[in-house]
Image 1 (cartoon, rainbow, N blue to C red):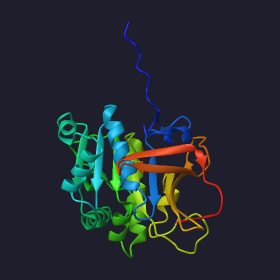
Image 2: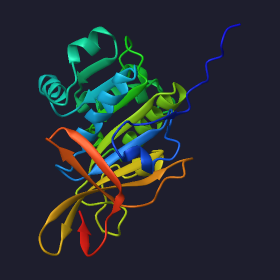
Image 3: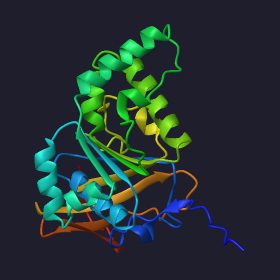
Image 4: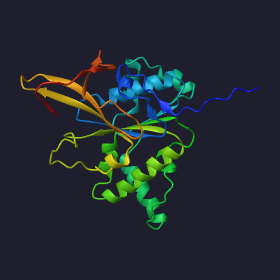
Length: 259
């Protein structure tokens, strides 16, 4: 009698300490924003995700709109990822995209569809010869800037992208750089803010400024649909400039400013 394989419904990240904040895990097919300011560790977080997922046999597509592929390969090697070996096994696909090309392609598809919302997102973004379980995008901010003055086009694009990923049970992590945390009452409005409402989850990396001038790192899972997350701001560190470690019991206390 053939043993029935139980369908996987949730993903654990494998990042030390982080999964303790997640409950069951990240629902497969979710789109999760990794949000924070410059130098907060967003890319390192995603590279650690890539390493852990590939080690478990997941197929990962890393889409870069900023750093060249050669430099990304160096980053991967620095955190112990044998890129060539994973590529041969078909577990990783690394590609640099031009955000302006994406914006032009979306406009062309919308024109072809007579401005309707139903467009075929795959030829715009997802390589046809690779069927990923996980998609990492660095960064959403670059894509948003390419749609400058066309926020409605950007929203249409992101809606269709999220629908495509969910329909194909692809879990995505999208880096989004912001000047200030967008949920703590500042007057600053980030371009592409609608994506916060479209996404299933938001993970925020903070630069914490103490009154004595000392800066610290902290992390919060702001939302994750369908999951009973632990709502707390906790400390994290990046060991040896490579390994992302979260301290789920080290809750931020005292006087501080989140940036």
